[in-house]
Length: 114
Length: 317
Image 1 (cartoon, helix red, strand yellow):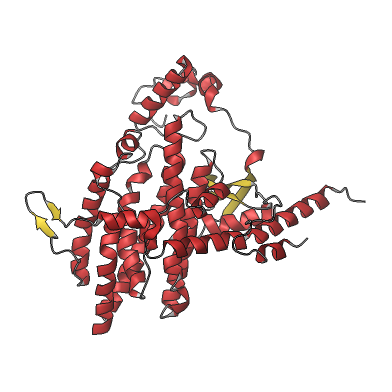
Image 2: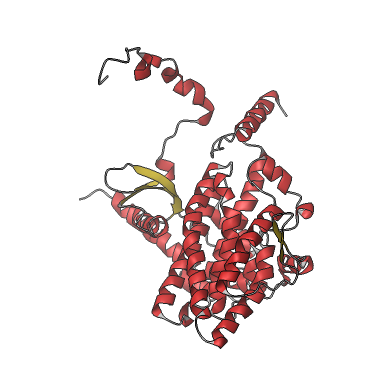
């Protein structure tokens, strides 16, 4: 069956599509490195049929003005994220360890380079 | 509402009131989600439909320089639409679904794009007046309470500045030309001035959603506040350009330290919003044709990807 023929054969008043399920392109998240020396940063998302097209689409969508020198695209369903609901308990281990910060330690002002 | 929901709502209200940002997987009231989807989708649709009036002149641009600029601008509008659809998807809707709603007239887009572009001067005036109004609307949205929307707006605002400046430069070039070219600019200004004022939406008294949107920090200013700011910004630009704005009541009010201006034709606004503007039918017809005519391309690309993936799964013999 040729989908192209079915679509071009469409005439006014007939059902819009031929009944075959519409292709759904998966969601990709896009990360761009602004310049060498910086991390890749999440900039948004897009849909594409495959990884290669996702990269091309990301280039066209997110780097039209030299915003990047490198792009990562990752399928959204491949990302594992912490849940916002467990925000407090999940990050709690870091909350009570003030001794991990340099400001925890009192050093006299006249000691140089410390 | 259960106790937990009340707690969640109270937490949400505190976040928003203290200028915190709401992120996609946070709990949010259903009304907030719906309002955002409606507003961002309408905004996305406007960017996509907005490609048409300007695309109309790409093949007839008077020079390669102007054609390259116009192509870049129209491509930007597509990009803006996609940034915004991307933001709506974080709210649990699918962009294909939103496109269907647009072409079935179940969702709206800005009324401004239902006016025709009759001469090349319209391209300049759209950049100056229409994108100028869009900037006034959009700059405060960069601080919108919903993170993905605010971030999309930051990207968009950076690019809009190019849009407005190329428009103004185009008009300055025409104004330095012949008498006929200057008349062409004035004619375009006369046609676009009032519709651009309508871009800020109904007067505050007739804008029922504004108060809630402002309480949720989705919107930052009322329609009339933004409209006033736009008029005050634009008047000196019109003077610099050497055109008149078609409003005999437009004058500086020393007491208010702002410009007074004439009444907007709200009947015309409502007509255009309801679908009876000069180009509504054509805009939607084109959008539908592009969407439906492109279906086989999307299907073919998906079929190719599926085939490649299946081949990759077969172990090498």
